[in-house]
Length: 132
Image (cartoon, rainbow, N blue to C red):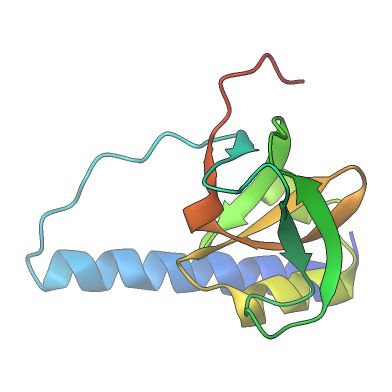
């Protein structure tokens, strides 16, 4: 792992820790950890259409791929600030920077058929297929 990648991971970890402390200090209720969804499936997309994979977490961003309306086993790398540390270890430095810069709660960083990018969470639900 490069020094830059290590620094990025440390910054992300410290940022998440700081948010946790801030939540505790403001006496907000702290919920149990959310079960991580490993795989998504497409939902709410017409059979004649597909779910766009975007370069950035924005509807106006360049379309870099499309997922079929009935696809399952779409790899979830994280949504919003919820990041999969195992996945980040396999990302290039630029991809990590993009993830951190683009993370928005309603967008998920996914991988489908070798294409990694952003998809809106409205069109994703937990996959009920046997995925590996």
